[in-house]
Length: 261
Image (tube, rainbow, N blue to C red; front, side):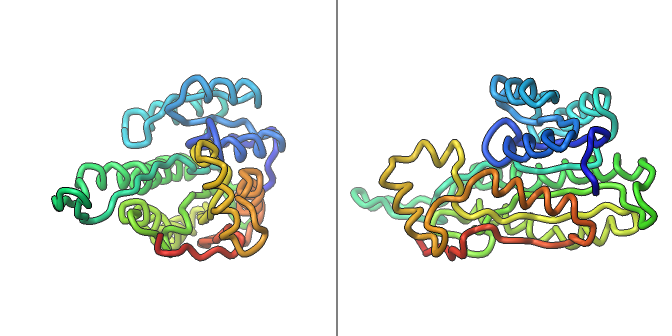
């Protein structure tokens, strides 16, 4: 797909980190970008900077997502590109014993459910609603290309660490549904791919102490550093622009394989 000034796009989680970098990369090619995010201040600032619009959207809410797409389509038209970067995480063991009291506790199921609702069901909610909209569009090429969707999973989908049961399950679900969704949409000319990032320079990571970041960077085989959001954006753009890229789950991780802890 050729990205140009006639290309409407939606990026969830676009106010910061991987989503912001992708929104900026799309805008640099001329795309009209709508940012879906919960952070109104940052989202508005990024949207203004790239000439896009901001939509305050909680991806766990049907009403919010419907309203976001309605606002984006009223401003830019039906999107042909959707990039899903909205996500959360936590670190809680399935069951654990308090070192001092010996009290045994299990993973709060409400906390597990919340991660699944945001990362997995929220991603699918946006895919399903966006794909339905894309199906109303005329194809761009003789092959029938209508649109492209890029999702964000994580290397934790394949080698999750201790405490990442909910996060790994949610991201593993995103990986697992990529090919079936691509097959569901193949006759409509809508491609679907997923990126599995490793350890990246994001706002959450930047809040960690320098020694923690240095240790994480040293654990990457090569290059020995954290990934850059712009590198994620480059891969997302490759998936969007390369017509034969479909139904794939691609690690972007400097060859890291996560240790148990």
